[in-house]
Image 1 (cartoon, rainbow, N blue to C red):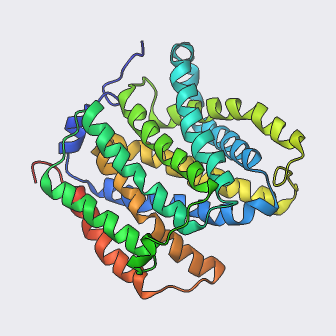
Image 2 (cartoon, helix red, strand yellow; image 1 turned 30 degrees about the vertical axis):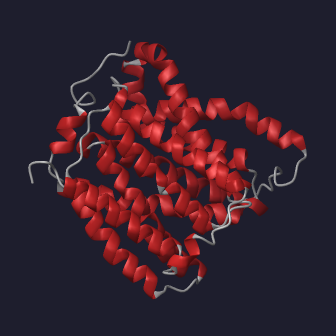
Length: 316
């Protein structure tokens, strides 16, 4: 049994009733920006680094970087690490392996539009799971916000062509992404369900370390398999991809997500995923030179009010 702390064990209902503070709003708009960098990394990775090698290197490096800042707490509470070892391993398996390596595998065969559309199921799974397991109820205005945000998301993903939904072609990579979406929902719910005596920073270090430990043998097997897309070309460009993935969509995004979830609850935090396509489009335009279109603006006009409504506390 874990030892809970007053900060980490704040009830889900209390978090859902809390108003959105300026720090929480900042995190809401910062987290999808961090995650969107993974789009750029994922597009460049197949020719340079294998999926498990990238996921393992990303989280091993993130654990080392954050471990420097969490070292004192980890030393003081080292006697508590072993008793929660299975929690760390399960969370590491879900958040670092499935949501890391699986997504890089999927990107080899699945177009970005399919990935964004399928990953959009995560908040739905989280809201349903939070209502069942965490006692997080949602008011009508919040469900309306979810509907608006999802509508705006789909509008962006299908580029404003609503007939494209019926024409979407699913490939084997889509199943990998669906596994990621489900895993992320479970990760988010368990993160809230399992109280921890560690701060969000120290807890993330332990989860990332457990996930890296789990992926190490898989990374070795992958490199020895000789299969296509399983070889890594080591160099400065590969190191840059690993560093970017470790700092931004790795340590930065996951730590911020954990902090935000404690403040506003699992279901409201899940709404940040709806901003992902907009951020990804902006980064693709700025870094890769891909054009922005009117459907991005329309999608933003639908998504942003949706996030506002879905983020309202019950008392508001």
